[in-house]
Length: 194
Image (tube, rainbow, N blue to C red; front, side):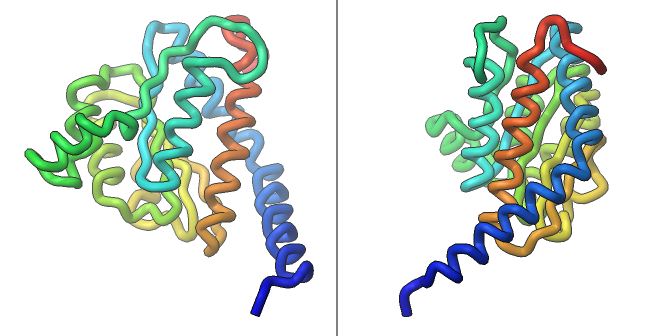
């Protein structure tokens, strides 16, 4: 049976619920933006990672920072750890899929950097392990989570949970967070108000 307008309107109502949820989390989003601003000012970088659709979100954040969001501001140092196909297949082949991000965090991450993890379930072993390695190396860890947060919940230094069961709603919420962070970081180097 084809989708009706009523079905599509129900999905849009769910998107509105995600936006309402994020309205209540603006303080937390501002906190992460301030952490990222301080790290960049101190000469550090942002690393991002995720799997599948969350990999696209991770790449999106890195692109907004290193490229541009709206205006012309200095490039902000950011690397998406899930975008180099040759590297990912090398690590996956030689060390296993669970090591995709830990190997890169170990090689690229430095104390004071920020690692931003994107996941709709929180149960991807490669993300849980990356968060643990990053924390051990002195990186600030931030997790954008969905559903109940999964195994990653409670591990990162900062986390934002989108408690929605539909993967699409979680991804849409993560995209909204990316754009809110980009808006706040657009003020770099002045940093606006922290």
